[in-house]
Image (cartoon, rainbow, N blue to C red; front, side):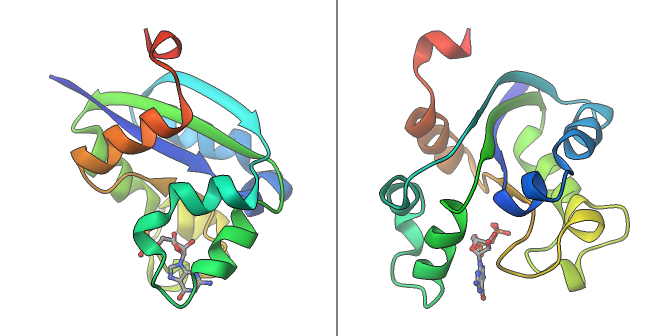
Length: 138
Ligand code: GDP
């Protein structure tokens, strides 16, 4: 059965001109783009989105980075979407990401790592609802 996940093309990938290549990789891997929106987000919106990380030492840096330039917010669908997108993304630190993964190809550092993908069903459902209204997801 088809599953939905939430993803962001992060500011570094957009700024470096990799958005279309990332989307192509996502489509080639069999994901349907249910909805997509390009926008800039505020630091406060980033803090709300990443609230689970609020005690982590990199929280401030992460929220500054995510609000530093335009991003693409999207909902993706396929069978096993959550795990399959995580595989396609590669490890958080691009230096240890597998060849062929989005982070290996397009990211430069553990902080500025090109793409976000939900890590579980519960987070996917929170993250989709944080950025999109029900009528946008039909
Ligand atoms: P992910 O699920 O692979 O995105 O990784 P995490 O959930 O552990 O972290 C969320 C995001 O925080 C990562 O994608 C990075 O953008 C950022 N992040 C994680 N670790 C670090 C770090 O050590 N330094 C900085 N600056 N950012 C980090």
